[in-house]
Amino acid sequence: MLQGKRGLIVGLANKDSIAWGIAQAAHKAGAELGFTYLNEAIEKRMRPLAESLQAAFISPCNVNDDDSLDALFKEVAEKWGKFDFVVHSVAFAQKEDLMGRFVDTSRGGFTTAMETSAYSLTALSRRALPLLNENGSILALTYFGSEKAVPNYNIMGVAKAALEASVRYLAADLGPDGIRVNAISSGAIKTLSARGIHGFTDMLHIAQERSPLKRCVSAEEVGNAAVFLLSEASSAITGEVLHVDCGYNIMGM
Image (tube, rainbow, N blue to C red; front, side):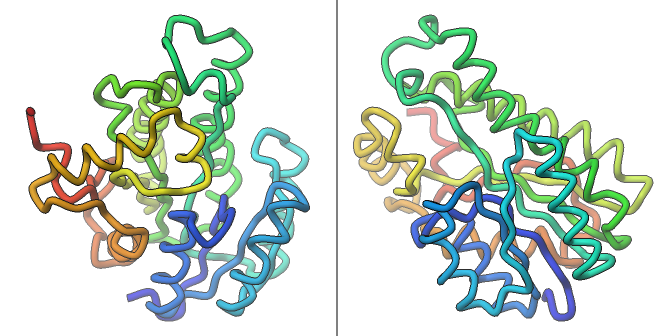
């Protein structure tokens, strides 16, 4: 489905990342991939994974730094010229803001979470736009805590709600250029960032008990859905949030 396509994966941290499930599925579907990393510690974990998929390049990128973003897309232009898709798998909130009460979120904690988890999609999209081929695709990752109040998800839920609104506004902006923008709302998966949420193990158990399929989703399943949204099989879909959560979001109780 992605044969001959080139795509940038932003936010691969380790083998447990949802981004890794997406990268594997995209590679299997025929895509050539480039990857970014935030710092040396993350690079040590993700580089062997990226290299196992014959990565076209593995570049540093801090999504909160404009110079870093400019340098990344300069390299993308030099390596590829034009390319076909971006996967945004970036989110961060301070640990103390992922426990207790949302009302206690600090101003700095709010700003950090919103800038890293939501604004970064806009910053990436603006720089990607001149380089994306027509029928290109931008894909973000979100979670049900954007729609409902989930204990301890707190500021990240607010940031993900902003991310989903950004998807809609970016879809409206970039549609005339032939670029689609969508998001996947994945069910709970035991990733590095998820483990920072107080009570995350309980979230997994509840998802398994209450979802219609009586299990949790896998990163591989999210990856398969991502390939659909990144490919021309979804050519008329934009501005949407696709739930890939074993049906958990449809349940009232």
